Every structure is written in structure tokens, then in C-alpha cells.
Image (cartoon, rainbow, N blue to C red; front, side, top):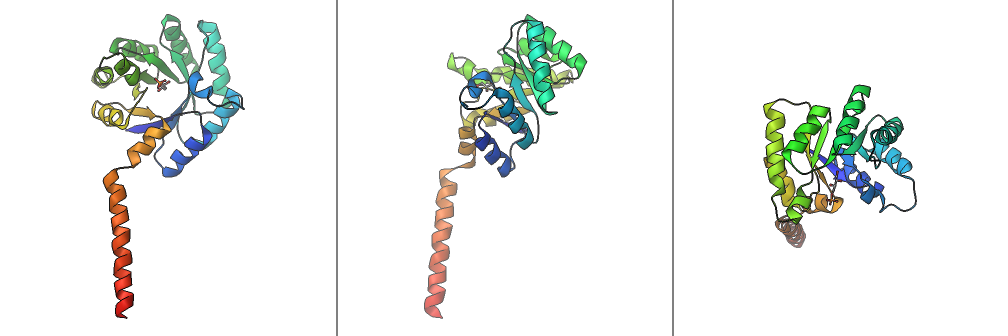
Length: 221
Ligand code: E4P
């Protein structure tokens, strides 16, 4: 399973890439809004140079020509840009046009398996169901991941299911078990995945015993 970082923060991406666990990055207008001092283009260009895999850049226009214009511009910034297009009637047409031009797309704001199926048929290479936002309204977001992954695999569709809107580490495990090809996670959740209280306790105990053994050796010498 691939792991993407869901952030526009360069330091977080550098850290995740250093750890060797990051395969790509997803950004969106809300994540970019947290970066105050640089243009979206500048941020994307830098993210693309430090990220080994795809970097999603989201368009905000509602009309096909506007989305095409924005997406073509992003695609020129780097080879690993994937244009993020929201699910809609115009979005599907835009995805199809990008596919014909050889520009990869990530269909975002997916909230049902049917929406994901349509996005895959239009030619999106990444399908992004928003797990957390579904859970937020007291429904089961992971069902969409499971259904869509099954459909993609059953019909051998040329698309990957990307679990988005991840809220906690358990979402990552559940998405992996449900067959998601990718999960995109905020940096804080990546850190939570690293740590376990028994690991921390174990490290401290080994260190303590090591020091005690060395002290005993020194006393016997
Ligand atoms: C990623 O592609 C999505 O835009 C992101 O995961 C949405 O997360 P949120 O629901 O926490 O805003």
C-alpha cells in the first residue's frame, strides 16, 4: 500500500521523505491556505522536487475550460503533478479531456462508490473517497473504500483508490484492509503511526538495562 502525505508543508514532506515512507503528496486549497508566504506554484514546484511520486494540485474553477486551463498550467510545473478535479458533471468531462492529453488526474470529493466508478471510467488515475467527512456525519466512510476497491479490482480498472480525509491511525489500517491502494495522511497521523507506548517504554528499559550492565562490568573490572 502506498502512503501519501496530505499537506503543503515543506518541512513535513522533507521529514516523511527522509523516513523513506512517503510515495506522494496531496494538496488542496485548504492545505495551501495554511502556507502564507508563497504562491501555490512555488510550493508545488518545491514539493515536486522532494517527493518521489505523484503530487496532487487542485483546480478551483467550476467550468471545463477553466479547469483545463488551471490543470494544464499545473502540469507544466513538473512531471509528477497530478491534477485534482472535484467530482461533478463538468469534472468528469475535464478528467476525460485531461486523459486524452496525457495529464493524470485525481478525482476528489468522492462520497459514493458510484461516483468513484464514474471517475475511473472518465479516466482518473486516482479516486479519492473522503473517509473522515463521511464518518463526521455519522456514517461509515470505510464502506465506500471497500466497495470501490472491489469494483476497481473486479473490473481491472486503470485507477487506484486513495483513502482521503484520514482522521486517525486506525483509518489507515482499515483502509489497507479494505483494499485501498493509497492512503493520504496528515503528518500528525504519520507520527502517531510511528509511536506506540510499549515501544517507547521498551527503548527506555533496554537503555536502562544496558547502562546497568556496563556499570556492573566496570565495578567488576
Ligand atoms: C486529500 O486529497 C483531501 O483533500 C483531504 O484528505 C481532505 O481532508 P479533510 O477532510 O481533513 O479536509
